[in-house]
Image (cartoon, rainbow, N blue to C red; front, side, top):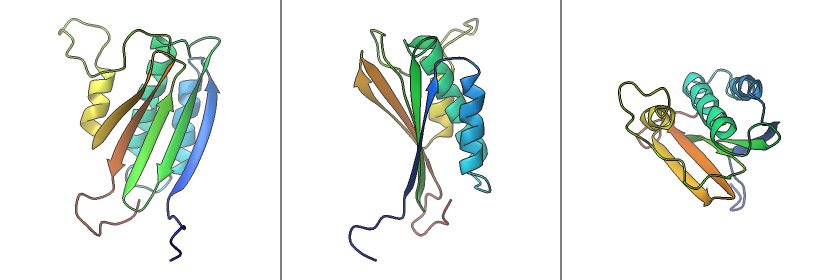
Length: 141
């Protein structure tokens, strides 16, 4: 293999900040990962991260959010970038039993093998990684 050749494939999608775009993001993810054993988990993660972008940042309404999906033989990486506008970075919370919100990113962190948050008040990217196999030489996605 040539030293500059990669086996990873990357897709991107920008969505307006409307609630119905969350279902579009799920469908887009499901279509790309059709046949992968990670498709259901990836769809759930994209749904949660997209909804968070719309509900908790200026991406909602007149803004937009961007999805990136990278697939390699060892990992599926799902990223959602919002338009920021919040004073705090997305984080896993421990809400009370009566709380209506605050469980989503915690759920993502349980499903994903790794969750990474980058950015600032002007926009955050949350990336969730799903490993195809925890053992070396695992099967491709």
